[in-house]
Each structure stands twice: as C-alpha cells, then as structure tokens.
Amino acid sequence: MDPKSLYQSLGLDADALKDGDLAVRSPVDGREIARIRTDSSDQVDAKIAAARQAFLEWRRIPPPKRGELIRLFGEELRAHKDQLGELVTLENAKILEEGKGEVQEMIDVCDFALGLSRQLYGLTIASERPGHRMMETWHPLGVVGVITAFNFPVAVWSWNFALAIVCGNTVVWKPSEKTPITALACAKLFEKAAASFGEAPEDLLQIVVGAQDVGEKLVEDRRVALLSATGSCRMGREVSPRVAARLGRTLLELGGNNGMIVAPSADLDMAVRAIVFAAVGTAGQRCTTLRRLIVHEDVYDPLLARLKKAYENVPVGNPLEAGKLVGPLIDATAFENMQAALQRASAEGGKVFGGQRVLQSEYPDAYYAKPAIVEMPEQTDTVREETFAPILYAMKYRAFDQAIAVHNDVPQGLASSAFTNDVREAETFMSAEGSDCGLVNVNIGPSGAEIGGAFGGEKDTGGGRESGSDAWKSYMRRATNTINYSTELPLAQGIRFGEDS
Ligand code: NAD
Image (cartoon, rainbow, N blue to C red):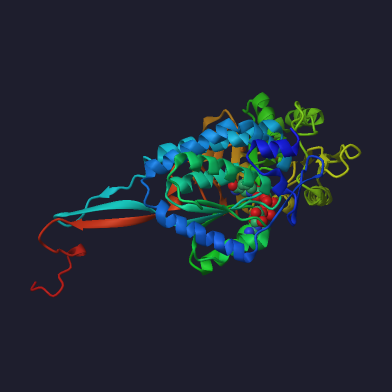
C-alpha cells in the first residue's frame, strides 16, 4: 500500500503529516514518508497536565471496567493488524512478518491485561495483635511516562500501556523520533476504542513527539510518577539519576549483549535454526538479538561451517517483499557503527565473515548489509559492547563453567540461552551459579519472548520487568492496611506506652 492510503486506513489525516519540522524517512529506501510537528516544551507541559487531570477520574473506574477499554483496543488492533504491521515495516524496516508479529504481541498483551484487570490481588497477612487484620491493597500510581526505542516501535509501548491503563493510570508516550507515525496510528486506534467504550475521560493517552529534549521533559517532571524508558544503556545512565534525584520511579529496559552456549550434546540442527533467527532476524536490531556464541571446541568447526552456509544464503532485501528475511539497518549511523565494530574486532584478532553493504545501487539512501560472523580468539572489549547490528561473535570453550564465566563477563544482562541435552548443564545454566540474565532459556534462542513472562534484564540492562507475570506491580502503589476490630489498642511488638506494666 502507498504511505498515504496506509495512513488513511489507520484513521490518520495524511495531509496533516506533511508539514511538520520532523522529517520521517523510511529505512526501506531512505525516502521521506512524513513530516510531523514536534511538541514544544509548553505543549509537553500541557499534555502532562491533561494526563494528570484524566488520572483523577480514571482511577475511580473499577479495574474490570478499565479492562473492557483495553479489550476494545485489542479489537481495534485485530481489525487493523495488517495495516499497522505494514506501517511498522515501512517506518522501521523489520520484515512484514515481524511487523505483523509486533502487532500480534500488542493483541496478546491486551488479552493478558484484560484478564489481569480482575486479578490485581493483594495479600491478607496474619496480624500479631488480637482483633486485628492486615492486608495489602494496590492503587493506581498516576501519570506513567513511556519513552520507547525505534526497534520495537509499538509492542514495547503496548506492554506498558495496556498494564498501566488497567492499573488505573494515564500515559504520556514519547516514541522514538525515528518512528513517530506508528505511535500516532496507535493513538488513533485507541481513540476509536475509547469512543465505543464511552466512559473514558479524554487524555488517557498523550503522545509527545520529539527527540531527547522532549524525553527529558518527562524525566524532569514530578507529575510523572513512573518513567518507563526503553533504549540504550547510555540513555538509561542519563535518565536514571535524574529521575532518582526527584525520587521518582523508573522502569528501565536497556541494551543487551545476549549470548548462547552450545554444548557438545546439543541438537545442532535446532541450534543452527535458533542461532540464525536470533542473530540475523530484525537485522540484528532486537534488544534480545544473539550477539555472542560460546561453542564447545568439539562442535565448533561443524557448527561454524553450517552457520556460514546459512548466512551466505539468507535473503537480504526489501522487507516489504515476500521471502526476504533481513531488511536494512535503521540508518547510516547504524551502518557506520557496524563497520567500525567489525574493524575493531578485526584489529583485536577477529576473523570477519560477511558484514559488507549490499543493494547500494538499488537503494543508495538505505543501508542493507550482509549479517556478519566474527570468529574471536577471546572475549574482547568490542565483544563486550552492544553494537546494534547483525554481528555474531563466535568463541570456543572447553569446560562448561568456563563458558558460563565468559557468558556473564559482559556489562549487560538481558537474554541468554544454552543448547544442551545434558540435564546437569541445563539446570546449572538456570541456577544461581548460571546465567546472570533476566531471560534464561534452554534449547531455544534468546530472542522472541512471549508476553506471559516478565521481560527485562539485570546489570546495565536496567533491572526493569514489563509485560507478564507480576510486572503489573510496577504500575501501582501498594498500601499496607491494618484494621483493628477489637475494643483494645494493643501496640505492635508488645510495647506498653504510658500504661502501668
Ligand atoms: P536510544 O537510547 O537512542 O533512544 C531510545 C529513546 O530514548 C528514544 O525515544 C530517544 O529519543 C530517548 N532518549 C535518548 N536519550 C534520552 C535522554 N537523555 N533523556 C530522555 N530520553 C532520551 O535507543 P534506540 O537506538 O532508539 O534503541 C536501541 C537500543 O534500545 C538498544 O540498546 C536496545 O538494546 C535497546 N532496547 C532495549 C529493550 C529492552 O526491553 N531491554 C527493548 C528495545 C530496545
């Protein structure tokens, strides 16, 4: 579909997307596909104020009713899955299958949040005092600021949004300045859901468009009770102390440097498939992309030979075309970073296979590259960095505990996996002495998480958890209630205050 028809099919006013100060380019071919107005400081301020006002009403709506609004939003997403998926591909250049997969993830999290809206349970706690009862209640927090990265332009926002809304909050969303159109489309679909719901206050969702300076407004504003920020470790290092300085809450989802251990007992057929999807899928631009392969020396040569063959045949090309598995990088800077990392790795003793630019004459303004494998003599500083591109560093190991040590010897701690049919190795990898990541998988790659689990990572990845399990607790405040239904006033710890002992 041409961009204009696509915008219209999602309820966007195509003419309004022509005269802003922010030029949006499609990484598919580098052409300008929209111009969008960025928000001034005053406009951001007004949107936060509106969201705060809406919160005062929304928090009174019972959670299962709030869930109904998210159910309706999920229905809009179902009805527009193909169009929104295509817009994700146009704006971000992941292949169409993955663009639609991202929308499916949004639908899944809406379903999850709907169920959750009837399960925001608190504990009851045995009181040490007679005639007393204790319990926990969970309450909405307020305005949740959501800053998102370009590589999952809509799914990561929806994890935050669906949960935040059923938990009784309102949301101010700053999408990546590289992918604002998909955010405006989501807002339109939500507007439709809110209209059929009928009882939602206006301003439950606000979009603020712009770059780092607009994000910083959310960081600094005390009315933003929780700031959920997804992006690079650099961004997290800037955001986290500034929110902490105002004693606000953060939920950080930052960079990963994900590894896989391949043991001698591994099913190599499965391992090859998992590695290729995890390392080259989304052109290496997932936070969970496989970047480090730690292979037992007995299976290293056959595995690497098979991987190189698969890499030679992987179809790189226009992500809107069927049959392509790897689209372009997001922009020229991403390509330059990839080349610089390959040069550094080579200077550190790495043997580079692939990585060169392709399709340059067909798409002079887009950055398609062959995915690269770099055989490294050891884990060097370059390997320890996350380069957001399809580079897979391969290293050998001899003993499993040594493989775990290498695996954990990076600053980031997001996703990890081990391919092994040895139950001792599998259990060790998942134990306290094993992988130090937030996502620890066996016989499956590190990428492509389901929404039912809590998603996030440790160390420089920021420690946040989103999406499934009990991640909803980040979006609420907990009150501990103690109720005295007796006629006495006993104090805790048996303290007697001003009474004869
Ligand atoms: P980025 O850090 O450049 O930008 C992310 C977002 O933060 C953008 O919206 C940007 O405008 C904003 N931003 C940047 N600096 C800011 C500041 N100082 N204050 C406020 N806002 C600021 O990241 P990117 O290039 O868009 O995305 C790629 C990175 O995101 C990778 O490191 C990837 O691993 C990470 N990521 C992590 C997860 C996760 O769940 N852990 C998910 C997706 C992406």
